[in-house]
Image (cartoon, rainbow, N blue to C red):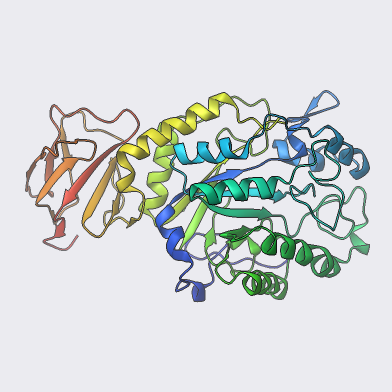
Length: 423
């Protein structure tokens, strides 16, 4: 097993040489994207032969040890007549998500594009014969949303030489290098040459991949599309940006990074209805951006291609908050204030933003010691009414008496914030 280094609490680290990559410009500005987990695993929806999977919906083949030939029969029932790529991308736009990453091939090996390497795909074995990658890439281009592709480079439970399936295929006879050269790289070539500009390739579960194998994949992607970013899960600290583990939030991360986040505790569609609130998602975004990171929030369409109505409401609510408070998120950087009891801070070239989760009951919000500001206002106040500000020994104090907090997450905009004594 190859050791994967921890750098600044990011498990799947960024290659330090990538920090000057100009392709990271859009990534640093976008801050919030949509992850789309969709495939034949949406059909069983977390249950197989009447039994619930012990893990997440998209892992059902692995966790229930379903034989590959039996599992592949699901493709004949993958008939997504409710799927509309334009509606999906429009939902991302309404949610304020500026990039979208689709699972072109997850660990189960089912492919959502017209690949020449297998018939286990949405274009051959599925009844409608649709190229989902093509449909979504076109919709993203039309709406100005950056388009990226998830590709499982190490695990493929229907391929005899890939990692993951030890119930059908003998691990001792696997030719993993042959799988990378003869299957993975040709499929990446299809994806990176057949669908226009691809903003990023999102690899996953590097497991025992060697440093040379990771480097080979990065170089292959960059050779075909020099400005296509590669995420940290390519392994061995060679990503163009770093990646946390699922739903994790590091305290003091280094470099450029992203956290993938579920909307209800699973990636692929199941009957799980425990959806996160708009406030929970807003807090996650605030935490990540205050530490220089991005949030990739997942949706899992059902077997017909529809996003659950509860999640549509969840996304539209967070989109409403971003319409009001997006200036504190988009095109911002790490905030200057750390370890705040009441929330987080971000910064633009002109302002510092305070994202206040714990609204002060007594009406006064105290900034860190040694900080002074010229003026402050509630970001959602169209009239730009100034909040009362006065200096105190413990730090500048903002008077919030009579000010109504935002229903999701309140944001205060500071002008002229500066350090007047050592923090």
